[in-house]
Amino acid sequence: MTAPFPTTPPPAPRAVLGDLLALAGLNGELADAAVLTGSEPVLPSSFAVGTVAQTTIAATALAAAAFWRLRGGSAQEVAVDMRHAACEFRSERLFRVDGEAPKRLWDPIAGVYRTGDGRWVRLHTNFPHHCDGTLALLGCAYERDAVQQALNGWQAADFEDAVAERGLVATMMRSAKDWLDSPQGAALAAQPVLSIERIGESAPEPPNAAPRPLAGIRVLDLTRIIAGPVAGRALAAHGAEVMRIAGPHLPFIEPLVIDSGRGKLSAHLDLRQAEGRAGLTRLLRDADVFVQGYRPGAVAGHGFGPAEAAALRPGIVYVSLNAYGYDGPWAGRRGFDSLVQTASGINHAEAQAAGVEGPKELPCQALDHASGYLMAFGAIAALIRRAEEGGSWHVRVSLARSGRWLQSLGRVAGGHDCAEPEERYLESLMETLASGFGRLSAIRHAAQMSETPPAFARPSVPLGSHPPAWP
Image 1 (cartoon, rainbow, N blue to C red):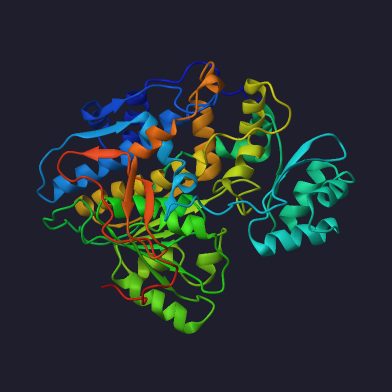
Image 2 (cartoon, helix red, strand yellow; image 1 turned 90 degrees about the vertical axis):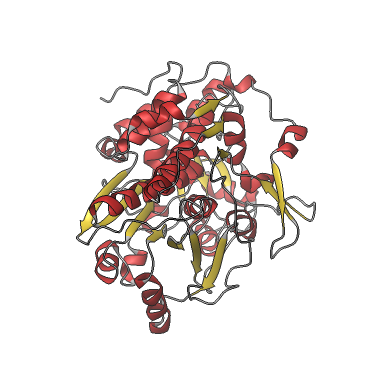
């Protein structure tokens, strides 16, 4: 039987940051130079979401500063305020285009339902094929009442398994203990929150002098939704040339494209076609970082797995994201932040702390955003290794392992009594930029750097706005 997660107060952010730096092979003492302001709670939650936001953003900035030092840059101060960082973890909810709030992010039948055995399940139906498949499985109409009526005839665990067998997405709510004692929860115990593995040999690539930490670093961003796109956005904020690659046939959620597209080029390539695969091969040969977050095996199935990418471009930093970890019976399952929260005991714990019935979500997509920053952080740490010792590198992050990390940091007493950030405060965090969608006001990056302040050199644009070629 596995011990439950701690309920003690979270550790000091500086200690958490030092552990992250050491995990990536960087000097943990770099955390001593960071200016970390604010304290928990900063959002209404019993979990240390502010600490996770502050430390992942700070770790990415400190890694960028270290890489800039390799380019001949000077030492600089890195500062991150916890409240600002937590608000950035809500960026997809808070932006405005021409003064208007984002369109609805959730499908009408997505969300939580009771099943016939009295347990709870969460459905994720934001993509049409997931929605259609779920309705076909349930044999019901596209209405919440009809879905509930159909689920009255199911046991929660049976429904979860049936959904997974069909490649759909839904999970049963578990307690943290039930998750830790499950086969997948046990498999996660041996997996680090961030892994960086050498997967090929190549000569060191020390970077040239540049005005920004990641200037000239080319990043291919093959991701969707929040976590992966946030990783690319974070790298762009530190000066990388990021190209978002999307399949023209794939569904997307426009508000997420708007928010996470800041700083990026955006091109279409259909990897089902030989021409699309040839186009990605050309881009990859001149890239430094390859980020992918599609369902396990999807990108590799088109010939762009880690080993293939390292063969095409020795010295590549390959970054992978999946939902439930890289080992265990759920390693191949599709998943999203909200589903991982439900399956792993986070929703159950939040509900207990708030004194409410049924699943209660975190106040932000913390697993998505944390995973995105861990991906960016890992990518920069791997670039440092490539510069100093050569090699191709594989960085791996998963939503479920990020959730386990959040749970391991303890609990915030009275966290649900925290007031929501005032509108006046949120307005003070906004920057206004031109975009391909209209005048975009969005949360500016929370990391402050004295010599190379993060900024987006390109506006957010619709998918496919650029040709698939490096400028």
